[in-house]
Image (cartoon, rainbow, N blue to C red):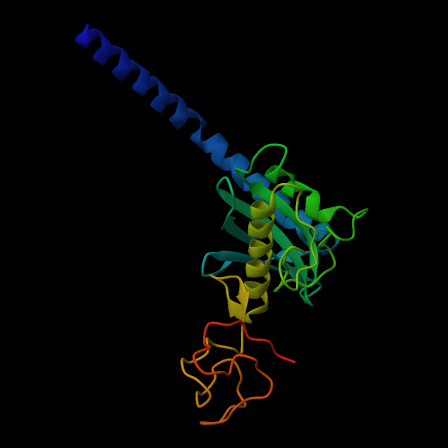
Length: 231
């Protein structure tokens, strides 16, 4: 019985390996074609007449800059971010000013009927609160977060946040004004130093040693964990 099971397992493994080798080139060709189509689809005017440069890697972000008649028109940026069900792999296009042209989902593992709505949710022209096309990224957030103004997918906030983080990361890498790994814009503020009234605040650049700032509400004795509020 053991010998029979071993033989069956070996034959099955060999069959699977054979099928993989036979289809590997076709699978890779399909992936490459899908990527090329996504690049053109998200560029201005869907890449008509555009020349796409060789891939440029910034951290884990890949940038495909595009020119037309010798002038830069924007770029398609491939980026990924962990969502609720797994990695979201996205191709997002920007014009030369950094405004979002369009996006395409290359791969995602979000919940069917919920998180997988990222494929079309954020480009719905009939819902301005959802639509990110035409906006500048860098600090896009769902409306449930402070300062956010993008409507999240119903019952899929985690997937929505991950998607917007990916878009921000792509924008920051393309514009070269941020840490592409975090997806966060460059910040002037660091964490505040510990201390009371005589501390030197890391949140504001105008503080001198021993100065009590009137613009921040966190300058009380033993009050270093409270949230900063700037006028």
